[in-house]
Image (cartoon, rainbow, N blue to C red; front, side, top):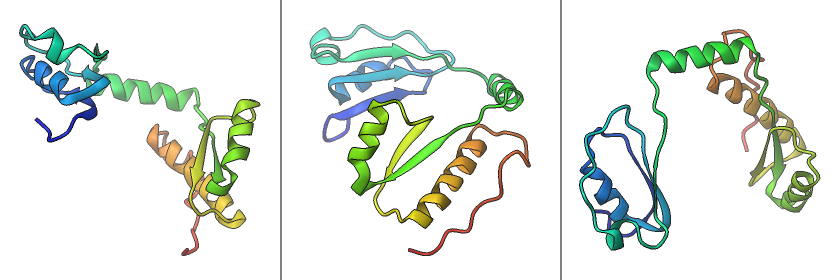
Length: 150
């Protein structure tokens, strides 16, 4: 058990006996996700220790490597074009207004230090990272920008 309550837990192990311990380790309102492809039976547990205070127990679909590769092939064929808009931390209010007015296409990200030049480079880099994260075929992403030292 951790020395303090944690915000959430993911159980990857196929051992159901870990689930009650994970539920006891999370804070009030937290979620424990069971992410194994298979799992042994979850033993009986104390409601007060494991589920009281709005703790949540969820199962998530776990797929095989082949399933993931198939999904990434489909994503490359569609093609998915991720979009990231960065804002300087000082412009957080502008970012919130843009979000409220539905003017952000994709994800909006706040950055601590962001000059106009770095802003453009960071947007380009974020697009490249997003492309590589969905594993599109080689050559589908623009070249990596050269970022100036801070």
